[in-house]
Length: 396
Image (cartoon, rainbow, N blue to C red; front, top):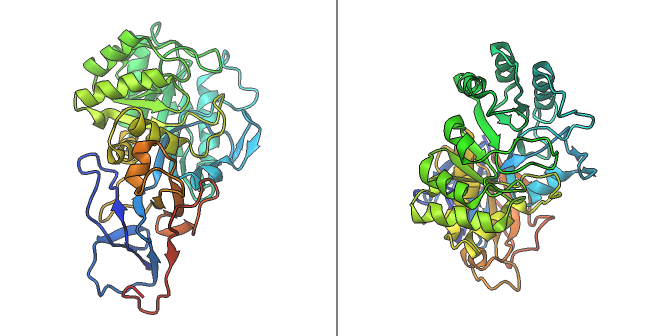
């Protein structure tokens, strides 16, 4: 297996909220996994990258995207968005439903239709990596009348999430609870649209009263997607539930601040996850996950390392994925990045805390270098990471 050594690391963000920063100056990748943190100085390698004092952090995990087929999004009539998001640092993306499929009648959805749509999307957009991003597609939009066979089909298709959005929850409580049980029996998470109606205009309004009995795995865009639930409901949601709470680019900034502050005060940031809720009415935002991290740190007063952990390890864990944390044995999905020229920050952490967009130099997915030298979607960092001459290495 190919080995890649990353040296001269200035800052190391683990993605693990329990220990979000670590004293790591060198990292060894073997194949598609992280082999060793701080390997011995005489470690041999096939390739070596000089990080030039930049930061290493996990690839970002976008917990809320709306794909349709491949890299085409009809809501913005745009091609290539997934590759652009990868250049913005997102290495894993999770579908929150393929509801933007042209011609889909939200008022006439059947159990077979939503299951078939999820199967087709999983077999197309989710079949291979688009622009090398790990796209988890095939998220069924739950409707009344689904049976064990429908959930078996979803499991066979590789779906990892199902979504309550058009489902009349209050009128069908027992069925909704049964769906949650059937999904979990098959290792599938449940996510629910919260707050007011979505861009479709057909979604169901969902606040604390509904969430308190539904008990999903993830409450989507609790601060708005785009309309949030009431302030009182948000407070009760944080105080009286335990499931994951997601914030998104599409939401209400004030509501996001309220949720984050309350979770921080209670020491419960492990519940917080992140996504963009795009492409959609909010648009196509290649740097959306980075912007979310900057907002959490510079406005919501979260430490930069904790903000990175929310957008990586926290979000991955909530969706049952093994990515998002940089540790020995973990998938080698990572970014090399740092402050750009003109930034108020001299380090990645300083830049994030100030709200300054960082520059990405390298994107690595499963040990493969996908972006080298600089991203197409961020300004260049002040220092540029680069490959070193490697005959035998030890640090070339």
